[in-house]
Image (cartoon, rainbow, N blue to C red; front, side, top):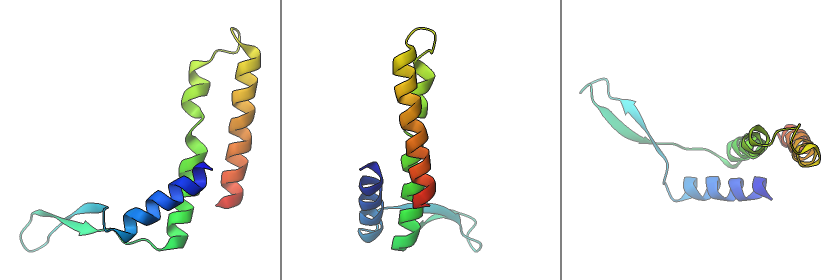
Length: 89
């Protein structure tokens, strides 16, 4: 579900010309905004990498000694999430 949300948001931002980066202009020496252009395959790759990192914060908060079952559930979900991200990538 997160993968599809990231993909739709990233591709939608590309279609609406919403994402820019600063590039150094060689003539004037100033930073000017330049539109980032990604096709659908690049949006899919970025989304697969972004959706695999959502469990890291939760696992760092929960201690195994205090709540072993909750830690195991979160850790297992993170492993499955990472495996799916690798397959999608």
